[in-house]
Amino acid sequence: MELSGLYILCMALLLDALIGEASNPWHPVAWLGKLISLELKFEPPKGPRRQLIFGTVIVVTTCIAITVPLWLGLTLLPSLNPVIYIFISAYLFKNTFALRGLWQAVEDVRLCLQRNDAAEARRKARSLVSRDASGLSDEQLMSAAVESCAENLCDSFIAPLFYYAILGLPGALIYRIVNTFDAMIGYHGRWEYTGRVAARLDDALNFIPARLSALLIVAASGICRADPAGSWRTMLKQHGRTASPNAGWTMCSMAGSLGIELEKSGEYTLNGGGAALSGAVISRSQDIMLTSAGIWGLMIAVVEALIGLAR
Image (cartoon, rainbow, N blue to C red; front, top):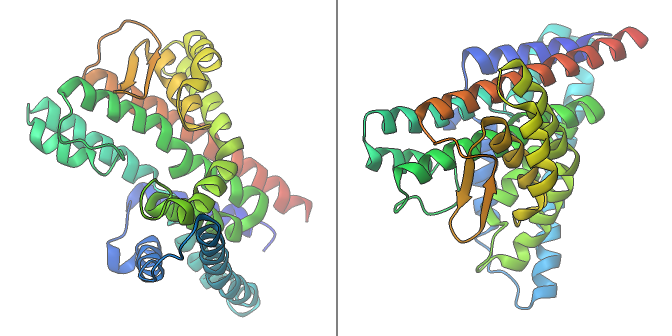
């Protein structure tokens, strides 16, 4: 089983490429979302401090309740049936990332805009961005699609593989749990202080992967005949313009690579150049995203092979 980590990685990548996202009844992240929804039925405690404590408890408890039993069960499986161990581990790992799902979500928006169906494009964009898409123009929808290609490359692919490489399957699972908590309650409003723990943890966990993702976009830009120098320059100069400490790195890298301006009205403008936004630009951002993911997948495969051979 020395190379089991490599086998699990390759099978998980193959499952994502061939099948994509499982339907909700079979999707562990959908189960996690339902569990979090049940936890949120409790009335949040009064006062910021108590809400922070409550937020810490539910995040930590959920991580332990899910990862510890799975880790114990999977520890026993290799000696019983190594093939089943690899299949189960690969399925669980695959559900911590969603490269094909991200590509398809961006493609859905691009195709709607190509058909001049802005209303449907706005509806499809809801799965990509947290902002209200109902009033977005075609150009703003294009910008949102390219931004999603860049920003979601990190949490939909780079980060889960990063934590798998250094902490194994439990690391990838913990990352996905924290990221899901952040998506559900890491925002202002009724759950502001409860969700602040998840939001800060997510920022911390994405600190290194976001910067790696930006560098991968720079490298992929050269392969995809974009502008790696512009990508590097825009990333270094403008990454601090976003409220998120991480998102600016990848989005600036993509904007500079394509020589375009990305804007979220009232929040930031990332100026990578004066090229016009279009469906073709969205397609190029998808190519860069997939190339970045391919480079990273190959790097992690080499790491897993070296670790397996060293045992």
